[in-house]
Image 1 (cartoon, one colour):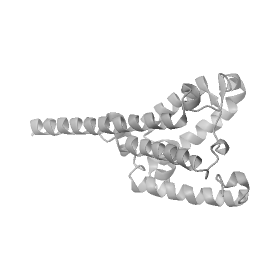
Image 2: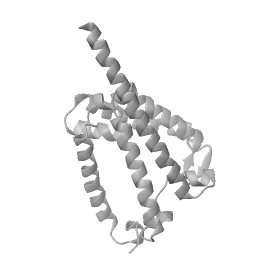
Image 3: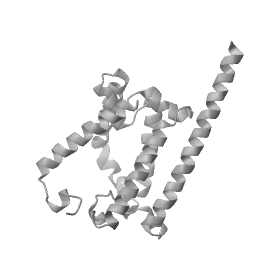
Image 4: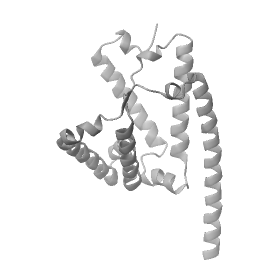
Amino acid sequence: MMAPFYKFDLFSEEFSFIIAFIIGIGFGFFLERAGFGSAKKLTSQFYFTDMAVFKVMFTAIVTAMIGVYYLSLIGFLDYNLIYRNDTFLVPQIVGGLILGFGFIIGGYCPGTSLVAASTGKLDAIFFLLGVIAGTFGLSLIFSAIEPFYYSTAMGKLNLSDVLHIPYGIVIFFVVLMALGGFIAAEWVEKRLASKNVEVKDEKN
């Protein structure tokens, strides 16, 4: 049997929605249990006082990369059938910056805002309303920005294509990058924690 299962017509489109719903509920549950439904937890990332978001998300990326690589290596997964968005370099950089600023200002990303809103957090509900309003606003002006939206098209790319090196080597360097990032995150957290203790002692 080969994956991705949906691409090989092993189940219907309707059943794929059911699977997506169940996975989404599970993903949201674990995000909430990890504390990612709190704007304080998320904004602490940008103050370098709690790097849990960085650690968890980077771990997820590395796990997925390694999983895809070895599953395709043993012939269980057809890597070429995995859906990837086309690359539109400049628009996606601009969009990433806008999303990043929204994350910093609002304290949520679209996914975590849904998690927090489902638990009744008012700030997340307003953030989610902003996401909906922004999406609707974009649809109204899309015809005006469409040329920019589809500019700098580069097709479906990944790092191995850009760097012209095997996918396994890319994973190796990403893993090293992750380990270095985890060590740096731990060092920053401990350093800032010790400074906060010193400030509190001085005030007392």
